[in-house]
Amino acid sequence: MKYTIVVPAYNEGTRIRKLLENIVSEFKRHEIIVVDDGSQDKTAEIAKSYGVKVIKHDGNKGKGAAIKTGFLNSNGDITGFIDADESISPEDIERVFCSAENKTLAIASRYHPNSNITIKQPLSRRIASRSFNALVQILFCLNVTDTLCGCKAMKTNMAKEIAMETQSNGFEWDVELLWLALIKDYRIKEVPVTWKHEKDSTFWINLPQFCLTTAPKMLVSLLKMRIRHISKKPLTGAIVAIFLLTSALLPIGAYILIREFNKK
Image 1 (cartoon, rainbow, N blue to C red):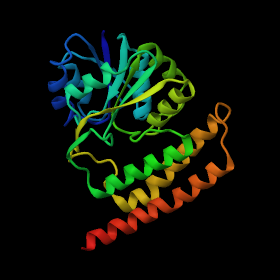
Image 2: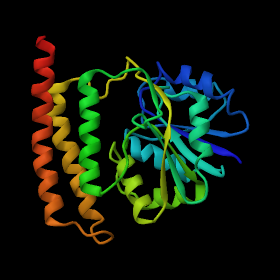
Image 3: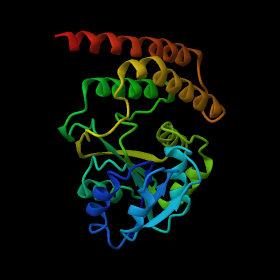
């Protein structure tokens, strides 16, 4: 069984080398595609030096757009993606891809009971991640503990079908992938992993900015996505009300909680 491992990358010149050093030797028989999403550094040049397939976007189109490009150019039997931050090991990548059997979308989960977190995220990011997952569960009725962990895989025909149907291009693409899998009656299997936080990651570090600007944009994007697919699964008024109330309270509560925690 041949894998296609897609790595979406934007200005990852400082991390892509270490990632490829670890996975190229482990996945010699498989296809690795690095999609350079309009980087302004040497991400593409570094990736090419490792002999992997590199596809370049003309500009920065978003993580989701990069993954879609990789999926549509896949030649493997199983297609999936991993983040460039090397937060999970090659052994866990193998475990996730091996779990993508039949009509199964296999996803790595940091919050699976059998997962092991060796280096924890800062408190602000843990709260943001948990809050985001809670909102997704409410709005999309997804029984998934971890929607954003950066390793997901499925049969290539499924991957290409979903890639052609998704309309999101940013962070929310992970959620749309899960949502389409759900309404297509695919099985979603969470796979336990050993996960570590990479300290040079810049996502969700500034808590005030997250609460005041990033979080509202994320929530609007999720609501738009849900409305876009409303014909496939009805959206009740109660769900909308709970979602909006939770959306308003979670960022405020998270900000207050972390501010008080930092005073101690």
